[in-house]
Length: 461
Image (cartoon, rainbow, N blue to C red; front, side, top):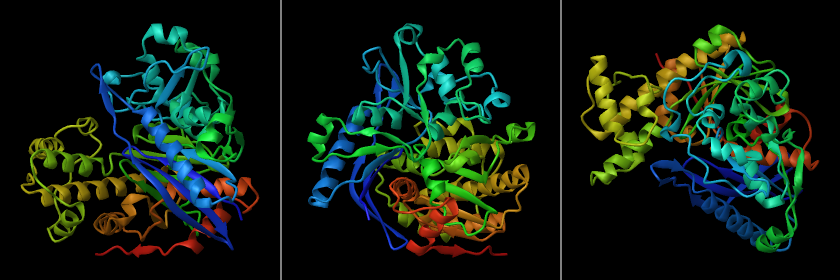
């Protein structure tokens, strides 16, 4: 049967989950959850990576306690993309990893889409590296993405995993190998980048020190370490002609293909080609997602308002449709007073300005649904796929208003669930590596369909 630990770190919280696959069904239990709060140091925004690592260790220890002597088969780690740590020759971290919302990469950047298939977003790893201190780069000997860094601390083995590596802008989208010529042309050191492994391959056993802390011997297995790659494994699709929305702080909207799409139309549409599990490509757009609501709630809390997201969504559902704005404007990327920015954009667009928290939420949700519809339609066109259904996985699948408005906007049925898509995909790849399940993505997705009650939303006229 096997017991699998899924370490799933998102932009606002981290989780350690216990997963099992029994009789063709996957079961997931949350063991630990901890906050992921960035810190501002010297005017820059950073991840509190040591607190996250401690949360991982504590969560694994609690999971081992729950197993009560049963072996832990393996550990898999997935996190957000693009952010990294630099290590020196002794494997020590050089500074605290920067947060992708830090302002150091603001401004114009060279468009590398024709070479890497990645939309030229300011927070991409390649642009972060070009903004690094030359002194830091001169002594750096290894770059590890955040999940690879955590795996290195657990095992002592420094390897990179291909789905997260694909978001760096330094990977050849066709060969899935580091693009040595691009790396050299950018003035970066080729030997800075680690050996790559694919999802399902072993990283290494836990070090003796880590095993003593968590209370068991086990090993780390590479999964789709980009959380979206793991989430798409868990899309319960019964047809290949599906679009997906991995909905959380960010929304990743796209389709699954076998080959990258690096046309000018894909570039102009803001699409990116990220490596998926089993040699697939995730042709997708980044849509700002529930970050707009999360940051609005933080502002209202600073203003002394005690508001519940659930109550706001219920009230927003009773309001008429709102004028939508473009949720992907750069002004919405950094933290701050989100309602004020939304109001300013409404004024600039000449549309009614929301006046209450619920009306702001309705404006955001209408805007997201419209952005989803545009992205789904264009993704299908670019990939030559006649999209039949839209799957929403992640936290947004619980947002009834967002799901229904997405069905209305796309004119397609929307299937919502499962919620913990990233952790599920993480566990399924581990379980397949251990021989507990077999087959390709269609087989893993059948396990998901058998395991969860899904909700379907049909488009209204």
